Amino acid sequence: MAMTATATFRTSQEFKNRIDFLAKETRRPSSFYFNLLLEEHLDDLEDIYLSEKVLQDIRSGKEKTYTADEVFAEAGL
Image (tube, rainbow, N blue to C red; front, side, top):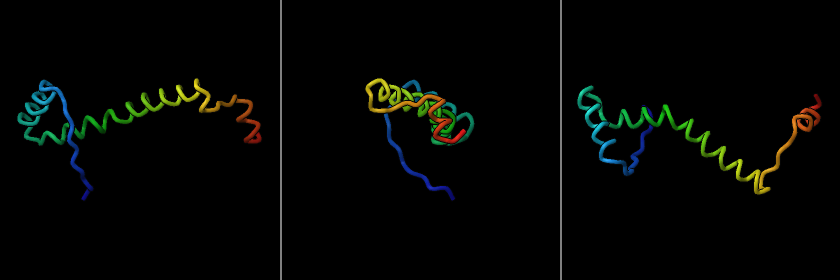
């Protein structure tokens, strides 16, 4: 059995109503749809927001960049 955890968060009443309606009409728990949303979109959100942080770190000098030639040379290619 998969391990589960409880998450509590606030959302708009409209989103809550829509999830509740969908759950009722399909006879599934609302948690099914919240988890489905997370499964389908969390990777994209991580890509977007974490790459923005890396870009900020590059611009501020906290993160170093390398040219393709430097990478190939280091790899012996």
